[in-house]
Image (tube, rainbow, N blue to C red):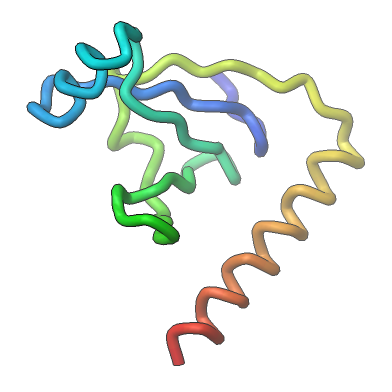
Length: 94
């Protein structure tokens, strides 16, 4: 399957935390991530205000992908926003 920036990855796994979240929320999923390119996602890492970038292959067989059906222009704006967020995170960590 071809992934596009801004597609949503609905995640689930067999970890205790994932199972616990799914039990409490009565949901199939424990959290969401956003695809930012063909190989990379961004997600909250469990600490308020922190995010992390991961390879999409980390969620192989543990996620469903939902397409946002954005236009190329909207995807381009999203990509620029992601670059801005990455730069802001780097600056804040200095």
